[in-house]
Length: 78
Image 1 (cartoon, rainbow, N blue to C red):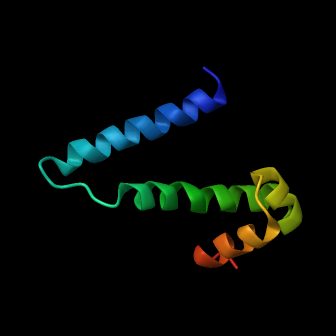
Image 2: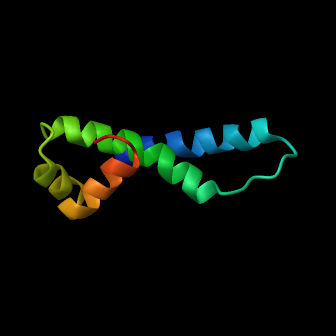
């Protein structure tokens, strides 16, 4: 299995566990919940890998530096 498949399987497994634990409860706002759960650790790891250089991190992520800054601020990482 390659790294992308490993990550996809991890997400799939955890979503299935989430729904199992939710039981008959109503799921809501899943998009924001999952995006937020993935985005913050992604930003943390990429910033460390980029030596906290925002331009380099933005390039690694395929986003603009301004977008990266907005995301870092929204996740209280700046």
